[in-house]
Structure formats: C-alpha cells, structure tokens
Length: 465
View 1: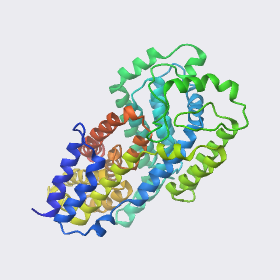
View 2 (view 1 turned 90 degrees about the horizontal axis):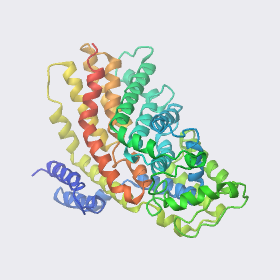
View 3 (view 1 turned 90 degrees about the vertical axis):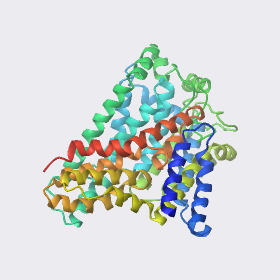
View 4 (view 1 turned 120 degrees about the vertical axis):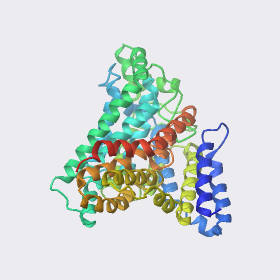
C-alpha cells in the first residue's frame, strides 16, 4: 500500500477513534505518525521536524496568562460586569457574543488573541447562566470568523490583493462586498444555531433568578466556573464563584492582591489584580495585532509578570495548563505534516478536482477542496492557494466576487473544530467535566462543515455569472 494512502486510512481511523470511549487521540496521534513514517521510510528526525513548536508555545503562553487572571478572581469580576446589562434577557447572550467577536476581529485584532480572550468569558457565561457551552462557542466563533473579512482586517485586506495577483479583475467594492457577504452568512448561522438551541435558552431564561444581585452573579444552573482549574486555570467550583461574588463589595476596594496557594482558591480581586490583569490583556491584544509579537511568548511573559506581581503560586499555574489538549493537537498536527510530506493531500485534491465541464460545478469542487484542506491547515494559507484555482472559472463567466465569498466561507466555516488553534483554546478553557463532550461536539460540527460549509457557500454565492 502506498504510504500516502496508508496515512489517509490511519487518519480516518484516528478520527473515528475519537468517538470511542476510553480512546485517547492525545496518546494515539504521535505513535500513529511514527508507524506511518516507518512504513513510508521517513526518518525520526524528519518526522519531529513536523512538530508544531509555535502552536505548543501559543497554547502554553495563553493558558498560563489566563490561569493567573482566573486565579486572582479577575475573570469572575469581568464576567459579572459583562452580564450586568443582560438581566433575564438570556436570548441576547449569543448575539452579544457574536457581535463582540465580530467587532474585535473587524478592527484588525489578531483572531487568536480574540479567541484567547473570548473563550474563557464565553464558557464562563455558559456556566453562570446554564446555557449550552457548544451553543455559545459556535455563535462567538461565527462572529470572530466573520469579522476577519472586514476591509481593515488581515483576511479582508489581503484576499482581494490575492485575486489581483492571480490576474482576476477585481471590482472597486470587492472588500466591502466580501465583508457583507461573509458577515450576513455568519449572522444567519448564528440565528439558526440559536433556533436549534432554543430549548437551552428557554431553560436558562426560566431558571434565571429575579433578584438584582442574583441576576448579575447568575446564581442559577451552574456546575463550574469559567473554565477548568486543572485544565487551563480558568475554572472553579460554583460555590467558590458565589462566595467570590458575595464578598465582592467588601473587597473591591482592597489595594493589595490576595495570595493564591492552591487550585481554585481565589477571592474577589483587589484593584491591583483587576487593573494588572486588564492591562495584561490589553498588552496581549495590542502586541499581537499591532506589533505582531508572538502571542505564546508574550502571554507567557505577561503570566510571569502577573505571577510575580500578585504573588500567585507558580506550581498552581503549571498544574493548570491543559497538557492533554496540548499533546493531542501537537500530535495531530505532526501527523498532518507527515501526510503533507507524503503527498496525501495533493492526491486527495487531485481525486476531487476531476473535470466537471461546468464553471459552477468546478467551483463547488474547489470549495470542497478548500474546506477539506482548511480543516487541517491555516485558513489564510488555504485561501491563498484556492484563489488562483478560480481564475479560469472567472474567465469562463463566473462572478469574481461571488466565487471569492464562496471560497472564503468554505475556508473559515470549518475552523470550528477541536484540532486547530481555535479548538485548542476553547478546550483549554473548558471545565474538565465539559471537555470531552465539547470536544465531540466541536469535532462533529467541524467534520460536518467540511462538506456542509462549502455546499452552503456555493449554494448562496456560487451561482452568480
């Protein structure tokens, strides 16, 4: 059997195994890569060259920073203020998260920085209000992905230039049409997701207390805090959260930070903890968006600064890192790098891109290739390789803007999966008792989006001639 075909079959088995009880994709990915590499005559040193060091540094740095922020009680403080204007209007929460995610990326913020900030807040709101974590994650991520195509965001600014470079005549308002097309689709998907999750929204609304203080703190159906204490430093038991909220008024004016000695042992934050944490988050966003500083290294540096400033026990932070998630995603990405080296994705793309005789049907095939590839690779890189494929289709009479929107949506709709940076940050911020279920939900959604996303994008925008 050809090594590329073997690698494809093993990958399929790994994904199927993720749905089997007591099967650990984190433990299986690297051994599977070693097996395929051995059969394919790929040396161990070459195989380890596919190990995603940058991604590991990113997850460690970001989750270490939020571990400190959570352990000082700042995350709960931010959550209570974010929920204050919502009251019992629980149905507005998904739309609010969608809008915030879209706004942050639309103004040019690096998407990983936005997700790093939004993930613990989103899961914290889900815990406080008894909403489905998956529901809020999907709506928030749709907003983040839609905002990426703002004319001043990275994706929106570069994609029309890629078309010009590919020899495609670009209309004057391509950037604006691209943004409006992607944003409107994302908004519709957000509303559809809310419709599917209406039972969760109704139950959360009915269970929300009516008292003014309880409405702010969300002392309703909650099982855990913003995210796990043992997984990413983002979680704490509901009792601790309620105690923190009840003590908030008395300690809000405290000038000295408290000392955190064990996981989850945190009281309401003092001024130094709040402003120090908020300043660290601002530096993270500005450093990543404006100065293009490596987010992982910057997050780790900020975590160290806060740890020293607020006297947080370092062992607590180390234990709070999501090592299982890091091992899983690093192993899968190493395996994907091996597959690329063996030419598996080129063979798959070649098999999918047989002659169709119609520019409209050819665009559907391209969208499917983009969706499949983007599941494993960077969306912007996939778009950069997908745009030249539509040049002959545009010459055949296809609308360049419609084709571009279809390609862009096909690339980003699959980003809601647990095997990329997005999913890694979400799972790292999830409570331990929710992590397995959320992983399976994100995996199911992401795998479905490989086909459903391109078909939807093509159906909406691929027929323009």
